[in-house]
Length: 280
Image 1 (spheres, rainbow, N blue to C red):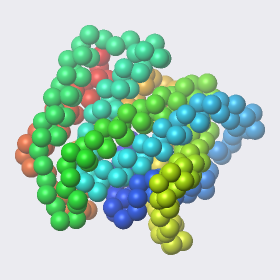
Image 2: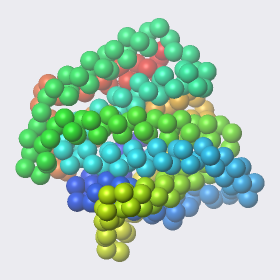
Image 3: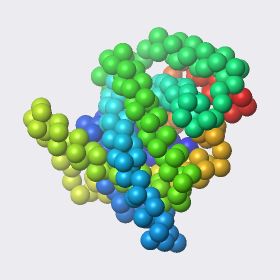
Image 4: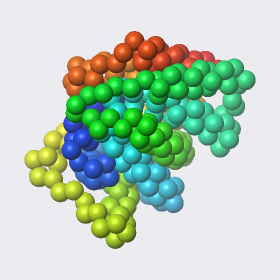
């Protein structure tokens, strides 16, 4: 989660200049090369086994592409700390429910109290507003994009959890990430045909910078897929929640996005609820 947090922060600068779907495409195209270490030592049988689950990869790639596009778009309207926290809060709740319904990972009664705490913290956080000159400051739109992004990526994470348990987790994570690039290409083509919105072009230099900023995903996705094989999906998702506070602090230093006291208190509430999920 710390690896994913770092690449997310580094990409914020580009997310505010490039439309979300185009950025998601360029980011994940770069993964064809930067994530190759995940295939080290993999056999052809390992690769064939993952690709044999192409239906699952297809669904997860579309969900992942939509989620990335929405998440990057949200950075134009609200500060990184708020967007990331709301996204994580919604994702945690959805992952707990999916683990309960689809993966036979029981939902303890006490989990409902922690879910309520997460929701309370999210509502309080959503009520607070920041105004910065480098943002569009349409707060409600930014929150909506963050929530929808979390709903989309939850299904992609579910697919990765299934793949990581039936096939090599590192090989699974490689094709899970790179398949999103293909889905983004299809979504860009559909958007172009339906609305006439052409993909945003970037220079080779910018592409290389985006690929370099995304490189920590090698650690983030690789280790996350291993975690999914070792324990419940809800715990694997919640255990890295401490990165929320670090994200908000780094966004303050990198982008000047200072949060007020009420927002920090809301983040603490959400953190308590998310972390507590690992004990239920």
